[in-house]
Image (cartoon, rainbow, N blue to C red):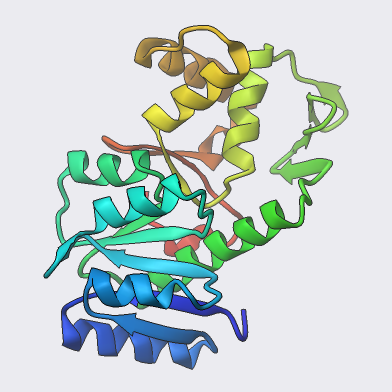
Length: 235
């Protein structure tokens, strides 16, 4: 992750300096903005990721995130929020943020989230969707839409496989329930409600058997497909 550039939008100077020091120690270049005006100016630079506070002196991070997404800016955004309320977290994810970290955050967790988001962004940019995604005893042939447990085919519906694809292609990232429903609606061209998503998830986990634990429930928010090195994440 050397030479990757991160925009840190945070008005708490002490927290910003501590975060900047930790990021630089990992080899990241950091641009610090104390408000949205400074953040907008920093967009002229090539950025690999944005760490975005919610409450800022001249506005809020939700508006800035929405502004970026309307301009089709696909840069990864991680919200830094002191608010642990579920509704606030879901709002950020639904506006197009890729992940969130609740203050006070652990440095190792923050670094893990940053690395996961940058890897995903690079994979999307280079159109390098893997042909096979392996986890536990399962091999998911993404382009062929086949799931094997060892050498045995797993009988899944197209909807269950589309759900699995969305999860594994965003490994390590929290996906809100609304985002998953929207994605399934786009591909199914049919109405997907909250109950339907729950049914798909229950069936998929059942069919994954001993590997169902790879899909983590983030209470009140959504789901995350954990990576092998996700020990820094909390369930």
